[in-house]
Length: 172
Image 1 (cartoon, rainbow, N blue to C red):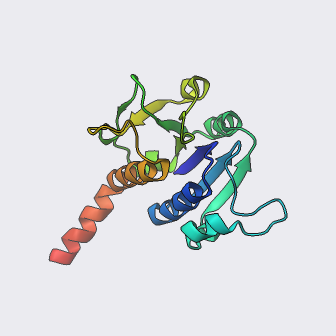
Image 2: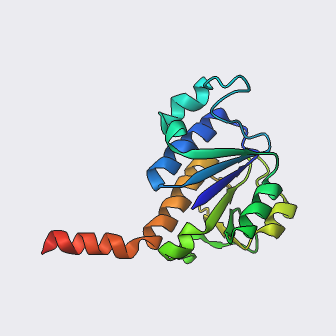
């Protein structure tokens, strides 16, 4: 699985996403638009990202992209299924999306910027939209928290057979 960050503004959110991506086994992060990268233009470490990433910014491959649309176009040519994590009338609950390990390997999860989310133009390029149902008074979660919920759901169901077989071996 790869992840595209569309114009994420917060350095701390980017660092947190790197850390979660490492824990989840994400193969690459695409830092699109104004999303900051772990190194500034002088190739120096960005302290705010490093503080929350705790070294994951060195462990997870990343690529800077001018726009998310360019990254989506590239990934579609490579056979990736593009999944948006966004609240929308066309979105399905994240728990309804179950992917095999093979499907997960060719999945790109797109996360939108903190205030407005993903644009209609980007959503139109996505194959599927998933959302996290909100039950309280707030309309959304922090982007790094939402990412953690979605990515671990997707990877746990994508590797369920492996997890079950390991559990079975421990019991007997």
